[in-house]
Amino acid sequence: MAVKQAVSDSLGNALTVLSDAVDRDLDRRLGDRLHCPPRLREAMRYSIFAGGKRLRPILVLLANEACLGAADAAMPAASAVEMIHTYSLIHDDLPAMDDDDLRRGLPTCHRKFDEATAILAGDTLLTLAFETLAELQPSPVAARCVKELARAAGGSGMAGGQVDDLNAEAGPGTLEWLESLHERKTGALLRASLRMGGIAAGASGEQLDALTEYGRHIGLAFQIVDDLLDVEGDAVKLGKGVHKDEAAGKLTYPGLLGVDESRRRAWDLIDSARAALAPFGPAGVQLARLAQYIVERDR
Ligand code: IPE
Ligand code: IPE
Ligand code: MG
Ligand code: MG
Ligand code: MG
Image (cartoon, rainbow, N blue to C red):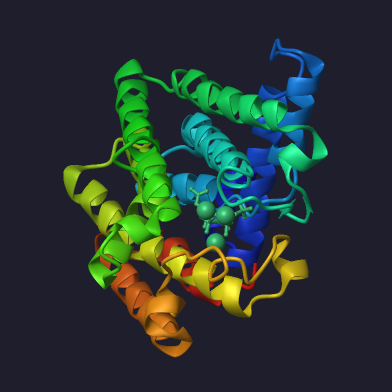
Protein backbone atom coordinates (compact mmCIF):
# COMPACT_ATOMS: atom_id res chain seq x y z
CA MET A 1 0.00 0.00 0.00
CA ALA A 2 1.10 3.59 -0.75
CA VAL A 3 1.88 4.65 2.80
CA LYS A 4 3.97 1.54 3.36
CA GLN A 5 6.05 2.15 0.21
CA ALA A 6 6.75 5.72 1.31
CA VAL A 7 9.37 4.47 3.71
CA SER A 8 11.67 3.21 0.97
CA ASP A 9 11.07 6.30 -1.25
CA SER A 10 13.16 9.45 -1.32
CA LEU A 11 12.14 11.76 1.51
CA GLY A 12 10.45 14.21 -0.87
CA ASN A 13 8.19 11.47 -2.30
CA ALA A 14 7.50 10.08 1.14
CA LEU A 15 6.41 13.47 2.46
CA THR A 16 3.98 13.88 -0.43
CA VAL A 17 2.53 10.39 -0.09
CA LEU A 18 2.14 10.65 3.67
CA SER A 19 0.66 14.14 3.70
CA ASP A 20 -1.82 13.14 0.96
CA ALA A 21 -2.91 10.15 3.06
CA VAL A 22 -3.36 12.39 6.10
CA ASP A 23 -5.34 14.92 4.03
CA ARG A 24 -7.71 12.17 2.89
CA ASP A 25 -8.30 11.08 6.47
CA LEU A 26 -8.84 14.67 7.65
CA ASP A 27 -11.19 15.34 4.73
CA ARG A 28 -13.34 12.40 5.80
CA ARG A 29 -13.35 13.44 9.46
CA LEU A 30 -14.23 17.07 8.70
CA GLY A 31 -16.83 16.15 6.06
CA ASP A 32 -20.53 15.39 6.34
CA ARG A 33 -20.09 13.02 9.25
CA LEU A 34 -19.19 16.00 11.46
CA HIS A 35 -22.48 17.45 12.68
CA CYS A 36 -22.03 21.16 13.35
CA PRO A 37 -23.14 24.57 12.04
CA PRO A 38 -21.91 25.04 8.44
CA ARG A 39 -19.88 28.19 9.27
CA LEU A 40 -17.98 26.33 12.00
CA ARG A 41 -17.12 23.45 9.65
CA GLU A 42 -16.12 25.95 6.96
CA ALA A 43 -13.72 27.73 9.34
CA MET A 44 -12.17 24.43 10.53
CA ARG A 45 -11.69 23.20 6.96
CA TYR A 46 -10.33 26.57 5.85
CA SER A 47 -7.50 26.40 8.40
CA ILE A 48 -6.87 22.64 8.18
CA PHE A 49 -6.60 22.63 4.37
CA ALA A 50 -4.65 25.89 4.00
CA GLY A 51 -1.47 24.02 3.03
CA GLY A 52 0.51 23.16 6.18
CA LYS A 53 3.56 20.89 5.95
CA ARG A 54 1.85 18.12 8.00
CA LEU A 55 5.09 17.58 9.88
CA ARG A 56 3.48 16.24 13.06
CA PRO A 57 1.32 13.57 11.38
CA ILE A 58 4.32 12.60 9.26
CA LEU A 59 6.30 12.09 12.48
CA VAL A 60 3.51 9.85 13.80
CA LEU A 61 3.57 7.72 10.62
CA LEU A 62 7.38 7.54 10.29
CA ALA A 63 7.82 6.64 13.97
CA ASN A 64 5.15 3.98 13.53
CA GLU A 65 7.05 2.61 10.52
CA ALA A 66 10.39 2.73 12.34
CA CYS A 67 8.77 0.44 14.95
CA LEU A 68 7.40 -1.78 12.16
CA GLY A 69 3.76 -0.89 12.81
CA ALA A 70 0.91 -0.80 10.27
CA ALA A 71 0.33 2.78 9.02
CA ASP A 72 -3.47 2.46 9.00
CA ALA A 73 -3.43 1.71 12.70
CA ALA A 74 -1.68 5.00 13.48
CA MET A 75 -3.73 7.26 11.19
CA PRO A 76 -6.19 8.46 13.90
CA ALA A 77 -3.18 9.68 15.93
CA ALA A 78 -1.75 11.40 12.83
CA SER A 79 -4.98 13.28 12.14
CA ALA A 80 -5.54 14.08 15.82
CA VAL A 81 -2.17 15.78 16.23
CA GLU A 82 -2.71 17.88 13.10
CA MET A 83 -6.06 19.01 14.54
CA ILE A 84 -4.37 20.07 17.79
CA HIS A 85 -1.59 21.82 15.86
CA THR A 86 -4.06 23.70 13.62
CA TYR A 87 -6.12 24.75 16.65
CA SER A 88 -2.92 26.05 18.27
CA LEU A 89 -2.11 28.10 15.14
CA ILE A 90 -5.63 29.56 14.90
CA HIS A 91 -5.42 30.70 18.53
CA ASP A 92 -1.72 31.75 18.22
CA ASP A 93 -2.74 34.22 15.48
CA LEU A 94 -5.60 35.84 17.44
CA PRO A 95 -5.30 39.54 18.37
CA ALA A 96 -4.94 38.56 22.05
CA MET A 97 -1.93 36.41 21.17
CA ASP A 98 0.45 37.13 18.22
CA ASP A 99 -2.10 39.21 16.28
CA ASP A 100 -1.18 37.91 12.81
CA ASP A 101 -3.01 38.45 9.53
CA LEU A 102 -1.40 35.74 7.39
CA ARG A 103 -1.12 31.98 7.97
CA ARG A 104 -0.29 29.21 5.53
CA GLY A 105 -0.43 31.79 2.74
CA LEU A 106 -3.99 32.88 3.50
CA PRO A 107 -5.69 35.42 5.77
CA THR A 108 -5.74 34.05 9.31
CA CYS A 109 -8.93 32.34 10.49
CA HIS A 110 -10.16 35.33 12.52
CA ARG A 111 -9.49 37.65 9.56
CA LYS A 112 -11.34 35.43 7.07
CA PHE A 113 -14.24 34.74 9.46
CA ASP A 114 -14.40 36.58 12.81
CA GLU A 115 -12.77 36.19 16.22
CA ALA A 116 -15.59 34.24 17.84
CA THR A 117 -15.70 31.77 14.95
CA ALA A 118 -11.90 31.37 15.05
CA ILE A 119 -11.92 30.70 18.79
CA LEU A 120 -14.70 28.14 18.42
CA ALA A 121 -13.10 26.50 15.35
CA GLY A 122 -9.98 26.02 17.50
CA ASP A 123 -12.03 24.64 20.39
CA THR A 124 -13.81 22.22 18.07
CA LEU A 125 -10.56 20.95 16.52
CA LEU A 126 -9.16 20.43 20.03
CA THR A 127 -12.12 18.33 21.13
CA LEU A 128 -12.41 16.47 17.82
CA ALA A 129 -8.76 15.44 18.20
CA PHE A 130 -9.58 13.44 21.33
CA GLU A 131 -12.72 11.93 19.81
CA THR A 132 -10.46 10.81 16.94
CA LEU A 133 -7.79 9.34 19.23
CA ALA A 134 -10.46 7.32 21.02
CA GLU A 135 -10.79 5.28 17.80
CA LEU A 136 -7.30 3.79 18.17
CA GLN A 137 -7.28 0.05 18.70
CA PRO A 138 -6.92 -1.78 21.02
CA SER A 139 -8.39 0.52 23.69
CA PRO A 140 -5.27 0.55 25.96
CA VAL A 141 -3.39 2.09 22.99
CA ALA A 142 -6.12 4.75 22.72
CA ALA A 143 -5.90 5.50 26.45
CA ARG A 144 -2.11 5.85 26.34
CA CYS A 145 -2.25 8.15 23.31
CA VAL A 146 -4.98 10.31 24.89
CA LYS A 147 -2.71 10.80 27.87
CA GLU A 148 0.34 11.57 25.69
CA LEU A 149 -1.47 14.17 23.60
CA ALA A 150 -3.35 15.77 26.51
CA ARG A 151 -0.10 16.22 28.46
CA ALA A 152 1.75 17.57 25.43
CA ALA A 153 -0.98 20.09 24.54
CA GLY A 154 -1.83 21.17 28.10
CA GLY A 155 -0.46 23.32 30.88
CA SER A 156 2.88 21.55 31.24
CA GLY A 157 3.27 21.48 27.44
CA MET A 158 2.08 23.62 24.55
CA ALA A 159 -0.53 25.81 26.27
CA GLY A 160 1.82 26.53 29.19
CA GLY A 161 4.67 27.29 26.78
CA GLN A 162 2.43 29.71 24.89
CA VAL A 163 1.64 31.54 28.14
CA ASP A 164 5.35 31.96 28.91
CA ASP A 165 6.08 32.93 25.28
CA LEU A 166 3.55 35.76 25.55
CA ASN A 167 5.04 36.96 28.85
CA ALA A 168 8.70 36.52 27.97
CA GLU A 169 9.69 39.47 30.13
CA ALA A 170 8.27 37.66 33.20
CA GLY A 171 10.96 34.95 32.83
CA PRO A 172 14.69 35.22 33.58
CA GLY A 173 15.63 35.64 29.89
CA THR A 174 18.36 32.99 30.10
CA LEU A 175 19.20 30.28 27.57
CA GLU A 176 17.83 27.63 29.99
CA TRP A 177 14.53 29.50 30.19
CA LEU A 178 14.34 29.89 26.40
CA GLU A 179 15.05 26.17 25.97
CA SER A 180 12.29 25.28 28.44
CA LEU A 181 9.88 27.61 26.66
CA HIS A 182 10.60 26.15 23.21
CA GLU A 183 10.47 22.58 24.50
CA ARG A 184 7.00 23.18 25.86
CA LYS A 185 5.41 25.42 23.23
CA THR A 186 6.66 23.46 20.20
CA GLY A 187 8.74 20.47 21.29
CA ALA A 188 6.10 18.74 23.39
CA LEU A 189 3.72 18.18 20.46
CA LEU A 190 6.52 16.94 18.18
CA ARG A 191 7.68 14.50 20.86
CA ALA A 192 4.14 13.29 21.49
CA SER A 193 3.66 12.71 17.74
CA LEU A 194 6.65 10.35 17.68
CA ARG A 195 5.65 8.61 20.87
CA MET A 196 2.07 8.04 19.65
CA GLY A 197 3.41 6.55 16.42
CA GLY A 198 5.54 4.21 18.52
CA ILE A 199 2.73 3.32 20.92
CA ALA A 200 0.38 2.52 18.01
CA ALA A 201 3.06 0.11 16.72
CA GLY A 202 3.49 -1.60 20.10
CA ALA A 203 7.00 -0.15 20.54
CA SER A 204 9.30 -1.41 23.31
CA GLY A 205 10.41 0.87 26.17
CA GLU A 206 13.81 1.20 24.53
CA GLN A 207 12.25 2.25 21.23
CA LEU A 208 10.00 4.83 22.95
CA ASP A 209 13.00 6.26 24.80
CA ALA A 210 14.88 6.58 21.50
CA LEU A 211 11.91 8.34 19.84
CA THR A 212 11.63 10.68 22.83
CA GLU A 213 15.32 11.54 22.64
CA TYR A 214 15.13 12.12 18.86
CA GLY A 215 11.99 14.25 19.41
CA ARG A 216 13.64 16.37 22.10
CA HIS A 217 16.43 17.33 19.71
CA ILE A 218 14.36 17.91 16.58
CA GLY A 219 11.74 19.80 18.63
CA LEU A 220 14.24 22.35 19.81
CA ALA A 221 15.88 22.57 16.38
CA PHE A 222 12.46 23.07 14.77
CA GLN A 223 11.63 26.12 16.88
CA ILE A 224 15.16 27.56 16.48
CA VAL A 225 14.63 27.38 12.71
CA ASP A 226 11.14 28.91 13.07
CA ASP A 227 12.76 31.81 14.95
CA LEU A 228 15.51 32.09 12.28
CA LEU A 229 12.93 32.13 9.49
CA ASP A 230 11.20 35.04 11.22
CA VAL A 231 14.50 36.96 10.90
CA GLU A 232 15.77 35.74 7.52
CA GLY A 233 12.88 33.98 5.79
CA ASP A 234 10.72 34.93 2.81
CA ALA A 235 7.12 35.74 3.77
CA VAL A 236 5.77 34.42 0.45
CA LYS A 237 7.46 31.01 0.83
CA LEU A 238 6.60 30.84 4.53
CA GLY A 239 2.99 31.91 4.03
CA LYS A 240 3.17 33.98 7.21
CA GLY A 241 4.50 37.35 8.28
CA VAL A 242 8.21 37.85 9.11
CA HIS A 243 10.13 40.22 11.41
CA LYS A 244 7.41 39.94 14.01
CA ASP A 245 9.24 38.38 16.96
CA GLU A 246 11.63 41.20 17.77
CA ALA A 247 8.89 43.82 17.43
CA ALA A 248 6.72 41.79 19.81
CA GLY A 249 9.56 41.49 22.34
CA LYS A 250 9.73 37.68 21.97
CA LEU A 251 12.59 35.76 23.55
CA THR A 252 14.18 33.86 20.62
CA TYR A 253 17.43 32.07 19.78
CA PRO A 254 18.58 34.60 17.17
CA GLY A 255 17.64 37.39 19.59
CA LEU A 256 19.68 35.84 22.39
CA LEU A 257 22.62 34.22 20.55
CA GLY A 258 22.63 35.75 17.07
CA VAL A 259 21.83 34.11 13.73
CA ASP A 260 25.09 32.18 13.16
CA GLU A 261 25.29 30.62 16.62
CA SER A 262 21.57 29.72 16.47
CA ARG A 263 22.04 27.92 13.16
CA ARG A 264 25.11 26.10 14.52
CA ARG A 265 23.09 24.92 17.51
CA ALA A 266 20.27 23.72 15.27
CA TRP A 267 22.74 21.59 13.26
CA ASP A 268 24.28 20.19 16.48
CA LEU A 269 20.81 19.21 17.63
CA ILE A 270 20.19 17.43 14.34
CA ASP A 271 23.39 15.40 14.80
CA SER A 272 22.20 14.38 18.27
CA ALA A 273 18.75 13.55 16.90
CA ARG A 274 20.25 11.27 14.25
CA ALA A 275 22.45 9.55 16.83
CA ALA A 276 19.36 8.76 18.92
CA LEU A 277 17.96 6.69 16.01
CA ALA A 278 20.65 4.00 16.28
CA PRO A 279 18.32 1.36 17.81
CA PHE A 280 16.12 1.42 14.69
CA GLY A 281 18.86 0.58 12.19
CA PRO A 282 17.70 0.96 8.56
CA ALA A 283 14.06 1.41 9.66
CA GLY A 284 15.02 4.84 11.03
CA VAL A 285 16.41 6.21 7.75
CA GLN A 286 13.44 8.47 6.91
CA LEU A 287 13.41 9.96 10.42
CA ALA A 288 17.14 10.73 9.97
CA ARG A 289 16.44 12.44 6.63
CA LEU A 290 13.53 14.34 8.14
CA ALA A 291 15.82 15.74 10.84
CA GLN A 292 17.99 17.28 8.13
CA TYR A 293 14.94 18.67 6.31
CA ILE A 294 13.87 20.40 9.54
CA VAL A 295 17.03 22.51 9.56
CA GLU A 296 17.25 23.07 5.80
CA ARG A 297 13.60 24.00 5.28
CA ASP A 298 12.64 27.44 3.99
CA ARG A 299 8.94 27.21 4.90
C1 IPE B 1 4.48 26.64 12.91
O1 IPE B 1 4.46 25.25 12.70
C2 IPE B 1 4.25 26.94 14.35
C3 IPE B 1 5.25 26.44 15.27
C4 IPE B 1 4.98 25.53 16.13
C5 IPE B 1 6.58 27.02 15.27
P1 IPE B 1 4.72 24.64 11.25
O2 IPE B 1 5.91 25.32 10.62
O3 IPE B 1 4.76 23.15 11.36
O4 IPE B 1 3.41 25.11 10.47
P2 IPE B 1 2.58 24.42 9.27
O5 IPE B 1 1.79 23.33 9.89
O6 IPE B 1 3.53 23.93 8.23
O7 IPE B 1 1.70 25.55 8.77
C1 IPE C 1 3.73 29.04 17.77
O1 IPE C 1 4.97 29.64 17.82
C2 IPE C 1 3.69 27.84 18.61
C3 IPE C 1 2.33 27.29 18.69
C4 IPE C 1 1.36 27.59 17.87
C5 IPE C 1 2.08 26.38 19.73
P1 IPE C 1 5.12 30.93 16.91
O2 IPE C 1 4.18 32.00 17.36
O3 IPE C 1 6.56 31.28 16.80
O4 IPE C 1 4.62 30.34 15.51
P2 IPE C 1 4.43 31.19 14.18
O5 IPE C 1 5.79 31.79 13.88
O6 IPE C 1 3.37 32.20 14.44
O7 IPE C 1 4.05 30.14 13.16
MG1 MG D 1 3.29 32.57 19.12
MG1 MG E 1 2.87 33.20 16.11
MG1 MG F 1 7.48 31.92 14.95
